[in-house]
Image (cartoon, rainbow, N blue to C red):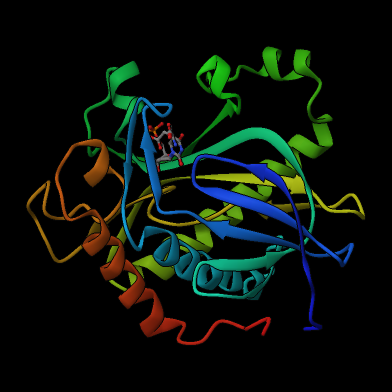
Length: 251
Ligand code: TMP
Ligand code: ASP
């Protein structure tokens, strides 16, 4: 990859900063150590989290690309920086649930741990000011964010991501309970998987551990004050690295 110069800060979210570069087709993403939950009501600094999520995300984006799923990812840069293609994010969070947990069980009479087959796909409107509400078909249509064809493509891609990640994580002894992805339009108008894929955005349970708390290797450790958050993310990276040792480097 050719050298680039870092430009201005384009956007700062809760867990990442996005910077322009002097190349039109490249933006740089810095993964932060900030941890938030419950729409940022709960906040902490977790040293090393940004690097762990960046290293895990880079490898998972490469896995998806190998499985034929387009992503915004270009290359890993510094330990907590990656280069990506500039995209226009669709303000919709796509959640796929393989096992009932989290908000689903607070909102519906479904027992935590119930297998969901076929997996459940939920769309949420991505806007912190409104608390990322669950979307209905009618609300999505009213907002005019996606044409019916684009929505179909978004759901097809999310399903393909689930198939790819489920198989990959099972191979490294992890149950993919559920996850959230974001997608965006690249300059040629194609929908691609964007944002990040990490223990901040996936529920991952250690298949070798039966204890309901000890098996949690994701952000629920932070949400539920279980401790050992960075250690759990480190365990996820260790296993992901075992299967995908060296992501491509932009350096
Ligand atoms: P939920 O059960 O809280 O709705 O979460 C479902 C999945 O989405 C879970 O893997 C965590 C992830 N998620 C995010 O990545 N960001 C969010 O803001 C929320 C609420 C959930
Ligand atoms: N990402 C969200 C927040 O920071 C919620 C969550 O992941 O639980 O508020």
